[in-house]
Every structure is written in C-alpha cells, then in structure tokens.
Image (tube, rainbow, N blue to C red; front, side, top):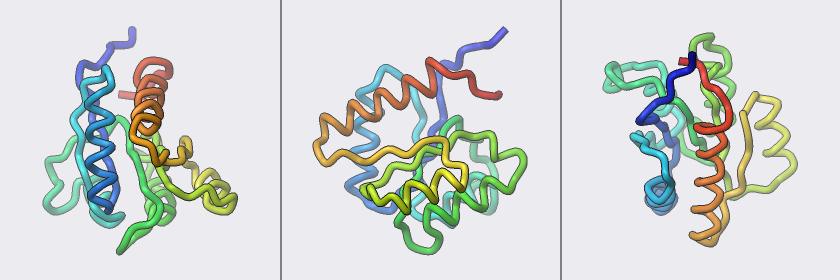
Length: 145
C-alpha cells in the first residue's frame, strides 16, 4: 500500500534571488505542504543531494527544481552528475528555465531530466505552472520512498 506524504521536500537549485522568491511564493500558493530547500549554485545543490559538508543532515528531496544557467556548476552538469549516482537517479528533476532553445531542451532530456518547463514571465502563469507541476509529481505519479 502506498502511503501518502504529508510534507514533501523540494530542492530548488537556483542562483537568482527573484526566481527563488517567486518559486517559494508559487509553491506556497499551491495546496501542497512542502519544505523548500535552496541551493544557490550547482555545486551546492550536488552537495545537498550527496549530503556532504554542511548538508550532512539534509533530507533526500522528493523533487528537484533545477535552473540551467548557474555559476560554479550549471544545470546540465548537475544532471550529468546526479544521474550517475544510483540512489539519486530516481529523484525526479524538473528543469525550470527561461531558455526555450531546442539545444537546451534536447540536452536536458538526453541527460535524463524528468521534465522541462519554461519559466513564464508573468507571476500568475508561473504560479499555475508550479501548481500543475506539483499536482502531477505529488498527486498523479507514484514516487519511490
């Protein structure tokens, strides 16, 4: 029997403070209880996922929201690294990007992104996109424990 979670852990890997704030607000407006953890670059995000250093006690996220263009380690490098680690590769990773480049989209899927969502510029559309995405990942599909 599948047990429904009461609180989901979401790791947001994003370097833009404005996008972090918008994503937090959009998730807060959804009907999902979520603990949002933020990593401000790809290296920090990978350390969180691998529970290294400051992140040794961090929870394993149920979902990762990943920006592509970041300092230190970009989103594609994060995808490549995560998908090589057996216990992490089952975690859904959703790319949230302003880019609609065919190259970025194709490369993300070839690196095993679970989905690719263009960040809408309008906050209400962004909120709807986040709400729909969370509904899909937390109400429609079954995720491993």
